Length: 168
Image (cartoon, rainbow, N blue to C red; front, side):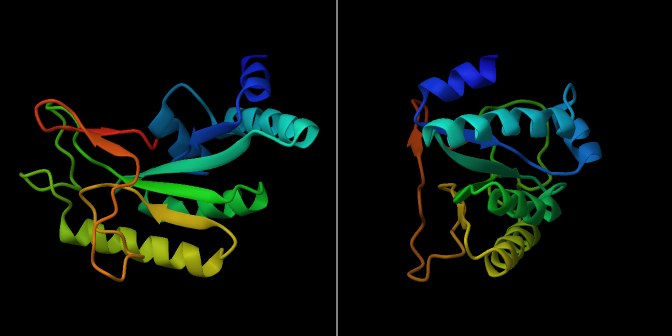
């Protein structure tokens, strides 16, 4: 009921999805299954067919452990007529004890992780050209930016210099 009510009132919904594998889905989300996700997505798509909206896009938080899952998420986007997949490389937002293997001591993305993510994005773009796959992170130089400028997506700097991410 909640999914339908939300979809009937909104013009745009961004769905955070990090894998299409049930085992990986359970590991990441803990209290949910991919089958439950598919059911809710089906409800959203029913409303989209009925009323011509809301617009739906996906956000994929790219972690070292799930970079290989990006292609499945982009394939799902294509199959469900989702035009945009926003790729958010993992980032440290607040100080806490978890050590992100994707980040160095200064909070910057490690080269191996950056290259693996760029390669996964390039491959997804090549295979699913009908889906816009964009990296959005102020600390990660976008692979599609030939001018070498950094793209800042929908981020803002918070008091104290930390970053707030409004994209996923």
